[in-house]
Length: 132
Image 1 (cartoon, rainbow, N blue to C red):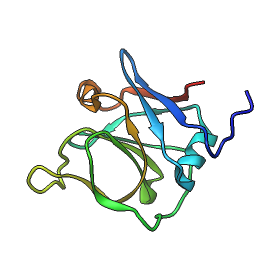
Image 2 (spheres, rainbow, N blue to C red):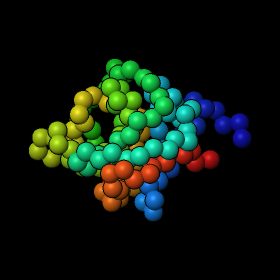
Image 3 (cartoon, rainbow, N blue to C red):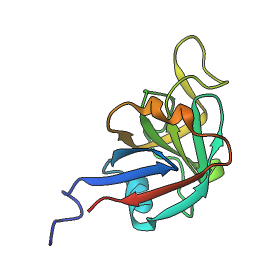
Image 4 (tube, rainbow, N blue to C red):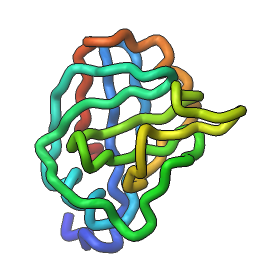
């Protein structure tokens, strides 16, 4: 099992009750910090079609942080030390874009249709865990 941490794909499971999806983390320093902190359990906050929750990771904004994201992207929001799942428009969106409250570090992407998270209610228990 000596798969190199740098070259190995970091796959995670995002679960909220019966709802869940697999995702892949990217190779950024923030994604590595999140991987190292797993598993994480929290309560979901919803903001339009975004779920976010504070995690025990404290990172600054990375050089490629951005406000407009793609459907299914996972972000880390530095001001709130929060993990974000984007699956549609937010109150900050203009037109059909998906816009975070402020710049987020992109840390990965949901595999499959991220819109399954539309069924997650505010305050629901949510878990991030490694897939071996």
